[in-house]
Image (tube, rainbow, N blue to C red; front, side):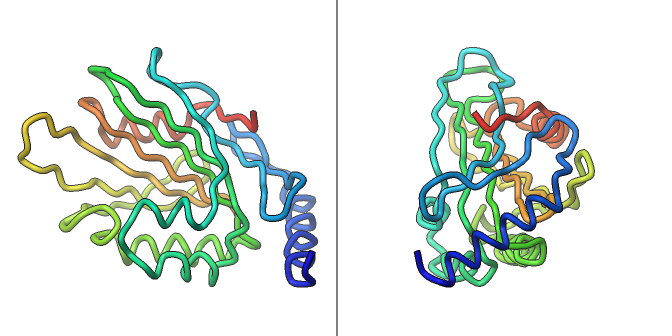
Length: 196
């Protein structure tokens, strides 16, 4: 393990010990074995029964694969991104057809805030031109809500993204489907989470 990586893990341990508080309905985050691997809370179960579920580790490459913005990897590095997890729920539904719950851990709160501000300033490139941006607060976590523009294509469905910060962690939630609204996004962000 490199000295820089060891220092990052040590800092994460200190932060976790000092920040044992978890928001209501949320579990804490802990480092696990393996370089760059962290366990972070994601939605415990789907708010929409019957959607298929998959959970995976989040790396800078995972986040970068969501966009054509090439500088997102550098933004993550500059912010001190350590890793995270994501759980995706997807299937046919007249409610929500896709839910992405992503938890991203940074070396400190200022790094998490720096990345959150980067996302806000690059919203059009990440989510589409004319993305609507509003402030968002859920269970003591604050950040931004992004309502992506909806194309006039047949079958197009609304997509709403909420990204909030809690200490050195960012919770990123994307909902897509006929019932994807700002109120529904807030309700899903407040749903129970798990490290499982």
